[in-house]
Image 1: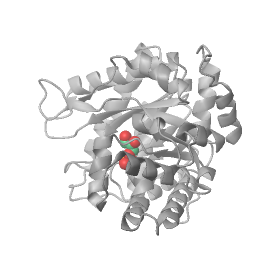
Image 2: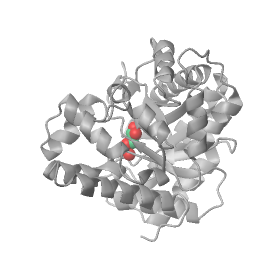
Image 3: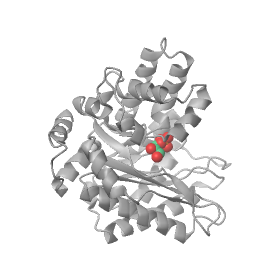
Amino acid sequence: MPGCAQAIMRDSLPTRAIHMSIEQLAEIARAMVAPGKGIIAIDESSGTCKKRFDGVGIECSEENRRAYRELLLTAPNANQYLSGAILYDETIRQSTKAGVPFAKYMLDNGMIPGIKVDKGTVPLAGFPGELVTEGLDGLRDRLKEYYKLGARFAKWRAVITIGDETPSGTCIEANCHALARYAALCQEQGLVPMVEPEVLMDGDHDIEACYEVTEVVLRSLFDALYNNNVMLEGTILKASMVVPGKDCAEQASVEEVAESTLMCLKSAVPAILPGIVFLSGGQSDDAATAHLDAMNRMGPNPWPLSFSYGRAMQQAALKLWAADMTGNYAKAQATVFERAKANGLAALGEWEG
Ligand code: 13P
């Protein structure tokens, strides 16, 4: 919806006081999940980016990170299927080779800039094997700056691990409380919160265990959002799908994953939410697309269901670019377009496979 991105840009004069109404937040949220469109997550911290670059033999220099993000953001025609992108602190301060700041490039091309604002996970004291996400200290001022830099939505990722003794109620509560505090701050500063409670695929648990944990986590999250006066009309949920653990002997069919995920979401997510986007979480490119497509074919659903994939949007392009940065540049961009198109069609339940 290029018109919406333009309207957002008109609002972005740095001196303007921020008193964004819920209607404006809701308009941005709806544009993020416009029919047939989703989001590319390119918000890996420099540490995670190094892991991905190491995997394909690329030096993780600032210039390589910039050049790679430029390749992804400027892939020709991908914006037909991308409503926005999630950037990292370093990335939102970077520009194209021609000197256009990435956020401006995006707005000029009908894409809404988003920003990852959590500061990553640390071990939760007293609860071995569990993690809590940090980043609330100083967040109000960071959000003010990101708004001036062009961001109109912000992501915070909490991580829940399924194990014999986990997750604990304390871990779920601590993470959902932090998600709700961050979401309230985002809305105060004129950004749509994209709340992401990721239930990890690591482990040998079955699909039922993932269903139970995801349902408890989502109910706890929406309780916390309610208690913190977060307006759901201006909030997007970034959810993990209900899948068996990676090491579970019994893997699930596309239909099982789609049915379980839909039932879990319907039981725990209020219908007033403007949209749900999924993370890929280590699924193959095709599996991530097939699951999203199947859920949309099973509709109508209470909310638009779309994608906010990182690895499932990027990994093919990264491999090609790593093999020959100059020679494969156009081919790598073409795979970004293909992945965006496949997932955009899946968001409509029209992917042909
Ligand atoms: P993946 O799709 O690679 O899981 O990444 C999405 C994301 O933004 C995780 O926070």
